[in-house]
Length: 223
Image (cartoon, rainbow, N blue to C red; front, side, top):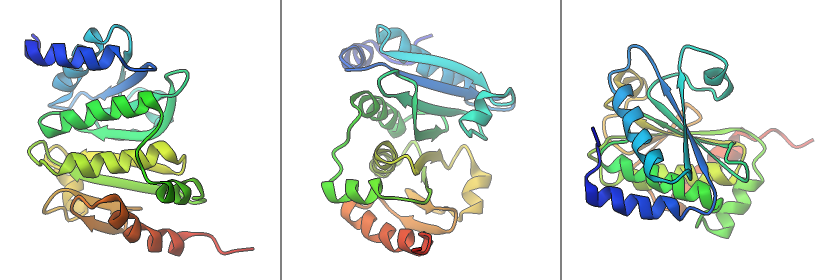
């Protein structure tokens, strides 16, 4: 059964068939996952209307080597691959079913990865391209939060620019134990390298102002 209505299917088809380069979506599912079936159906529907521009692979979370290779530890998960071959891993992850406002996040991720560029400022790009230590951003979201896509997409843009950045959009309602671990009481909430948290959907300049001291404190000492 189609999850998208006819008008939305037509609108999305027009967007997807016009992608400049193919994108591959890796969907990881698990036996105990309540929303894995819906997640798979939603992505299958996108692939079916894209005329080959969105490619789908479904993998079992508990069956290596894919989960290990892509460092996926929970399901449902979507890994967005792109580049010239449609297989480059930029570190863009979505954990949870892309429903509600977060469906728009997935569509924008696909468009961005297909283009291979972002609208980040030159100053931000310079900082990100000179990173020498890993930066892991976990952006907790919910499907009913209208501000969450902005926070998740900003983190995903940063991952596209730098190989040192991994950016996860995590549905707090689907992973409540993880949300409790990081004391997520409101969304969006971004966890930086497991230790620092940032509240709200900050504009790019404000987010970078928060991140720069963190990056400087974690940088290796000069030789």
